[in-house]
Length: 438
Ligand code: GLY
Ligand code: MN
Ligand code: MN
Image (cartoon, rainbow, N blue to C red; front, side, top):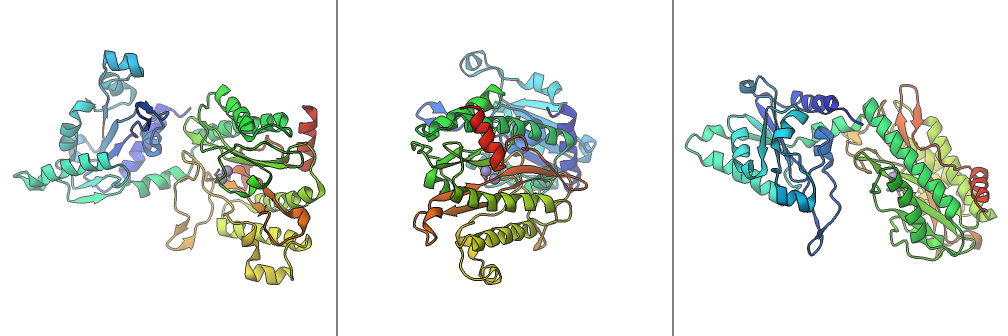
């Protein structure tokens, strides 16, 4: 659980990096229609959540470092208490309670939004706003700006508009101890879910049934939503990188690739495991799986502060190329294959990505054109894979095999800590777990 103090400290750090005499305006997410008069389950905007921990839609956070406020001003605009609306859609915090919960200087109700925007914009030198995220919010912001610009005292409007995201996203890239603890919990819940699916799986069950097992374990732990659409790909479906139909009947002899992670208190886990439907890897499956596992273990061993993701990616590609040459899937020498990057035909995605409130989390991968070096408290995924479609020109026994192994790690002062270590990935461990449930 992230404390109220941590949210306020984040707001202060954002403000401290804005120009003097600035106001930051950060809207929450809105409810999105799913069909006719039903909505998608609400998901808060990650930046708004990062700064407030407030779960209601359509709110606005306003922060200012103007001297007229003593250089620290916080306000929120929130949906008003409304007995009838609350009977239909749930309790609202309301402006009065928001004042104390978020240690605000002022709290406004949503019907006062336009006035609140005018009041908080006027007299500032700069405004920080994320244009282009939401048309309705952009329109409200631009309307307030042009009202001030057109006013007789036109100097009241901020003269420069900046985006707060570069500052905020750099902050989000480095996780606090509390964030790491929450992400560890997300990793543990997700690990349990993967183990549950391994234990349930057998030939004849459907991919969506494994998805249901996974989501059951998430929800029972208080993680109602997956952090992204769950992938359960059996047989050749494992070679479709973003397969989410999850509709096929699983056959004896299939490998099953599951890429699933819980969203817990806003934070994502992102785990992939690949295992045999019947509980025993065949020799060709074992061959490919062992190469991917070696690539992943070898990257995990080299990761730590100072390493770049590109270096780690290249290392994983080398291990995979060597494995594919040894299996006769790639022809020619190791050096020739590395030179021609032939691995790209079978390992088509990157090694990993930042992980946090978003599954593909924010933060720059390059600084001034140079690959960024990992630093303590960054969280990344490590997810090499090999995907050999049926129409590949390879020895027959390898056709239709797709394997990915994905874990989440936090960079520490001396190396890494794996947040998803509870779910087995050694061949013997997977087979033992599956045998124990049969
Ligand atoms: N689950 C999305 C990814 O692995 O990047
Ligand atoms: Mn991933
Ligand atoms: Mn994944």
